[in-house]
Length: 76
Image 1 (cartoon, helix red, strand yellow):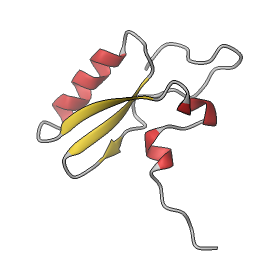
Image 2 (cartoon, one colour):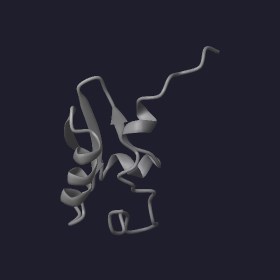
Image 3 (tube, rainbow, N blue to C red):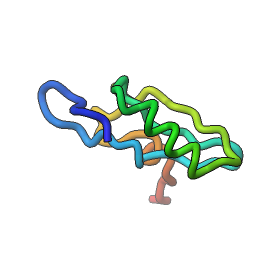
Image 4 (cartoon, rainbow, N blue to C red):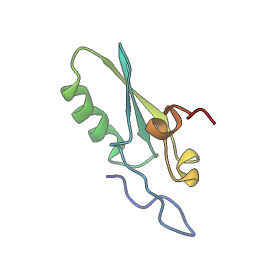
């Protein structure tokens, strides 16, 4: 887990909110010292895919990150 993200309230920042694509795993990062360790651990879990850190420090203010914005929209 990254350290606290958000000055006014604690935000749900988590490295587990990643997206697995065919050739790549996109991982949220937050400008925290744990970012590098998280990317390394996730790379070890997905040795056949490129792991890319995506800065989600601002995105997490919407209470989600990469996995959440990649989800399907239901038909109305």
